[in-house]
Image 1 (cartoon, rainbow, N blue to C red):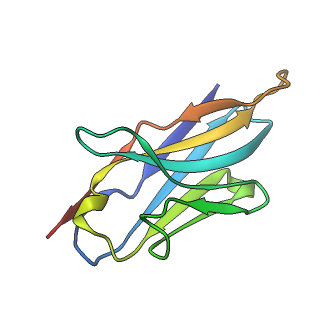
Image 2 (tube, rainbow, N blue to C red; image 1 turned 90 degrees about the vertical axis):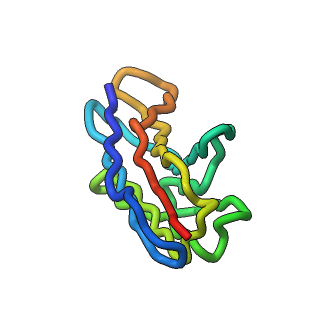
Length: 121
């Protein structure tokens, strides 16, 4: 099995910054895309950003120019640097990884437990 553990959430004032981390562990053969999603109260979960194993990134329009996703393949870790935070960024942020485990020829999606980010006015 694969476990994803997020850290770095918290309370910050508008305009501030936070850095989220997510480390994958367990029986991992390789990881394809890693991503951050978020879910605000009363809203559907949405993709914030993702990054391939080769470093190609993709961002939601709402965070372009403010958030930066990166990863350390050697550590199976993905990061999300969030700058110029706005109250509308308030949500639970979830890490997700498409991982191969030994003995399987297809990747499965694994999710972290989520970390709360709250941006105050």
